[in-house]
Length: 130
Image 1 (cartoon, rainbow, N blue to C red):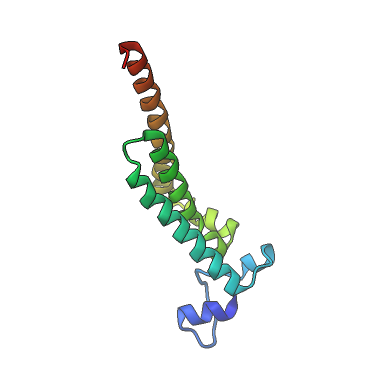
Image 2: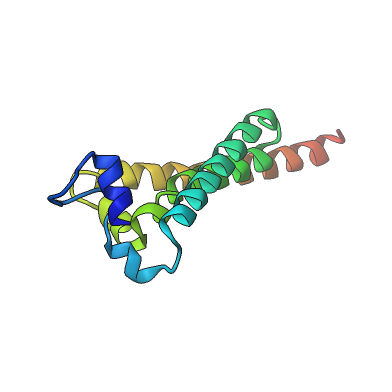
């Protein structure tokens, strides 16, 4: 992981605080190349789910589930690079706590609204004989 760090940061010797940390080496047995592949696969899958959610926009539950799953995959893909502990500490840092809270809040709100809209549409249609 250190060589990957040095390659990305452009360092050729002295090592300071870096975004890609060796702390994640202790928690995971994946090689640096496997981590990059897992990161890329998770990110691509997240973007694909997010794109597919736009196609099924008229079906609220499918949209909400695909959109939420795609976003969680895309955000969670960096876990392969920096580790779970570092990811959580970065997300809940004092500078980013509001952005994280807003993100989580809107993810929950989108799921609630999709389920509520679907149940309202279902009750409306069954009540009016549609």
